[in-house]
Length: 205
Image (cartoon, rainbow, N blue to C red; front, side, top):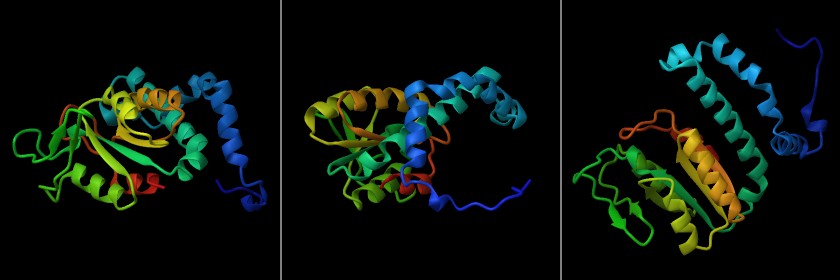
């Protein structure tokens, strides 16, 4: 139903929504509305559509809300950062065996794409991010982030992963004083995972 009034959000202070996000995060207000998450999941039959348990669907929705709040809170700091890195999960590679020609560097516990498959998501992410000045690491696990942080002097990190893994990465990045930005996987698993390229493009500010 449309509003019965007109509005112009440009009249609000520039940082209005970011300030709200900061307050929500600081006070964990969104955690106090778990009933709302449950209601939303039930209303949109998220558990049925995804074929998972109700509790799991609620966890995903709550984690996605957390992620969006974090992205908003860190947006200005992230945009102004000088040295940015992108973390890509190795499970989104087209091939998980010898057919993948990526190089592995134990110094960073990371793969580096050699662009052997045009239809590989890791390839697309690498091309897109490097064109915007990012250093790209294709990781076998989120625990590798700490090792990378010890080797590099970057001030912002963007990561592609499942929401739960992103939360762990955000914790590590924030403890190092870095701005963070997360891009959730649209399909998780141990292989053939997927993410939305347009969402990544928008995230690489």
